[in-house]
Length: 566
Image (cartoon, rainbow, N blue to C red):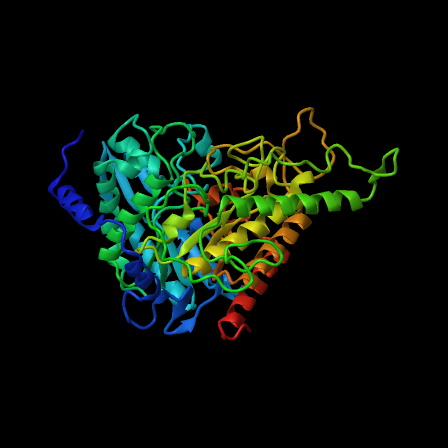
C-alpha cells in the first residue's frame, strides 16, 4: 500500500473526528429543521421544504451532465438561456472528469489527472465550473454539482471513436477510477471502506469545494451519482458491502463536506432504493401518537399518510393494488375473450401475477442502498431519488433481482411501468413528510423509439439491444422501449403526480441542446453530432412536446412557491 502523504494523514485524522456515532433522536430532530447558516440568498432545507430567504422554493430542473465539455463558453450561455426560457430553475451537472495519464484534451474539460497513481487537481476544469455558476446566477438558475459517479466502466479502445470522452455520462471517471489507481485490481467497494481511497476522494473535495463555497448559484453538493456497492461489471465487490456500508460512507463524507462548506446543502445522490428490512444506523424521532382512524402507518384508500418507515407490508399492499388494476384493465381490454362457461379468459400475455413473496429489488435492499437511513443522516439535507425503468426494476418480480423487468419498460409492460413510477413517487413523497426533509427527484428518464438506437445503459459502453413498440421482426425479442407518445404520457403522469404529491424538486434526465459549435480537430462531444447537438445516450430531450411537459412542470412548481410563472 502506498505511503500516505502528510496531507492525507491530516485528512484521515479529520475523518476520524467527524465520523461520530449516530446522534440522539432529539439532536436529529433539531438538525432536520435548523439552517446551517443565516446568510441571505442561499438555498436551504427547513421544515421539509427547500427555501430561499424564508420563502418556499419548489422547482423543476434538468440534467446537463455534459455542460463542462462543450467547445466554447458561448455554448454554455446559450444552453443556460434556453433552460431559463423553459422555466427550469436547477441544472444538474457533472462537476468532475478524470483523465488518466498524459492527455491532449482541452484543460477546461477535466478536473483531475491521474499519473502513475498520483492525483492532481486541474484548475482550468474547475474554472469552467465557476463560469457555469456565474452565468447560471445571472439567469436565476441554480446548479447542482455531482462530485463523482458510481458508473465508470472501462472503455475499450474502439469505443472512443464512437463515444469520445465526455460524450456518455459514464465516461467521466468515478468510483472505480479511484480504486484502480490506488489499488489496481482491488474490489470496487474499497471506495467506501479503504482509508487511502477515502482520503483521495476527500483530497478532491478539498480542491473544489472551498473555491465554490461562497457562490449563491450553487444549489447543493451531490456526493455521488447513484452510489451503490456494485458498479459497471456488477461483480468486483468484496461480498461484504451492503446498504449500511454506503450509509456509513455517506455520513462520513457529508460531514466532511460540511466542514468545507457550511453555506450549502449536501445530498447523497442515491437512486432512492429502499431496504425495508434493514437495520437502521440513523433512526428517526419516534412518530407522533396515533390519531383516531387507525394506525398512522396504514396504507390503502382509507389509510392516513404514514409517519415512519416504509414497510414490507405496505409495499405488498401496493403490489396487490397494482395486480388488481392490471386484472381489470386486461378484462376490459379490446379483444378480451369469454371462456366456455361465460367467465373472462385473459390472453396469455395480458396479465401476470407476481411472486407474492417478493417485493422487488427497488425495495428489498438488492441495490445496496437504504434511502430512508441515508435521509436521516444529520449532515444530509434532503432525500434524493431517481427513476430509470429501462435499467432498474421498481416493482416486484419473481424473475429478476436487478436490471429492467423482463421484456423492458415498454411494450406490454408500459402500463405497469407508468404505475410503478406513480408508486415510486408516492413512496418518496411520504418518506419526505415522515422524516421532515424535502425530496428531490434528481433524475427521471424513459427511452423512446427515436432514441432507442442510441441507448447506452449506465453500466455499458455500447448501444443496448432494444426494439420499439411495433411488430417484432427479430427471432429473439429485444428489450422493448416505449413509443414517443407513450414517453410523453409517462413523463406527464410522473411530473404531474410529483407536483401534486409535494415533491420539492423535479429534474429530468437529460437536457437536449441544438446549435452547439463543433470542433472537428478535437475529441469532444460535438464530433459525433452532425447538427452540433448535445449527446444522446438514449435519454436526450429535444422534442418540443416533451420540453413543454417539463416547462409546464416548472410553471406549476413556481406557482406552488408563490412566484410568477410567466
